Amino acid sequence: MSVKCILSAYSGDASRGSGLRYALHLAQQRNAWITGVLAHSQSDLERTLRGRVPKRYLETFFEAEKGKIQDVSQRFHEITKEAGLEQRSEFVDLSEENGISLSEFARSFDLIVTGTHSYTVDEEHMSANPDLIALQSGRPVLVVPDGYHADRLAEHALVAWDGKRSSARAIGDAMSTLEEKAKVTVLTVGTKRIAGTDALLRNLERHGIEANFILMSKGGTIAKTILSVAEEICAKLVVMGAFEHSKFSQDVFGGVTTDVINKTDVPVLLSH
Image (cartoon, rainbow, N blue to C red; front, side, top):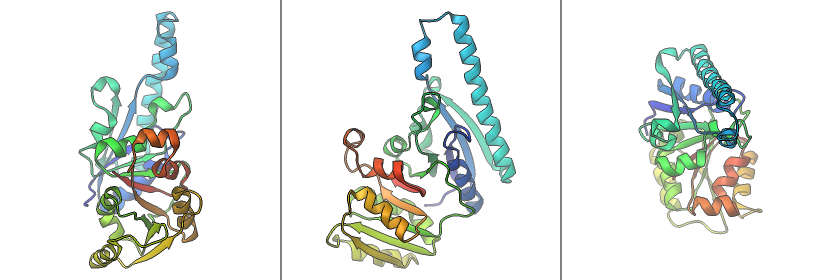
């Protein structure tokens, strides 16, 4: 997959801002364009205040929200200018009044880069939800954990392989990225090698990727096993499929996708 158009969901340095800096590394490496987007809706506080306080007080609240959005836009332009990408960047204020969701807007981009979702009261309505974007956009999503910093892109990638549709899609979406890595490790969590694994390794080799294969018995949850292996082998990127089960069940009962992106210390590339 050629990456020339990167969408960075950015809501400010104080709120999961690490994704923008990682996106800038990617844009510099690929000579790509980068579009910053702030998608926002009504906050819980605004919903609570509407109809309960005089309109003049709401106007003050709205002005504060506008100021916050302007600050995010200004900071985006400052950071992209510092990175030398001022001429290949733009910023979009995507409010729910625009009639298009972030997932819909993202569908024409090659890659979406975002931080983890914030659940704090004053940030949640401006914070992207990466698992929903992966589920609804049809595009690969790179989730960068809060506070993550890297001087360069990852040289060692861990690919979580279960032989299912979404993991195959993730490998396809990540192929050009994997070709650039010095090390690639394919991990299957379980007790036996999955049918098709030998063909996968052979086809990766045909792409110039000499991948190491690990078969690891589950230690706790699958997500915990993936992350512990990534830490053990010093992989700085995890590639995996998203949501083989419904997002509802993942939210209610927990699941591999939800657990990995909420607990990872390194970027995770998701595809559905």
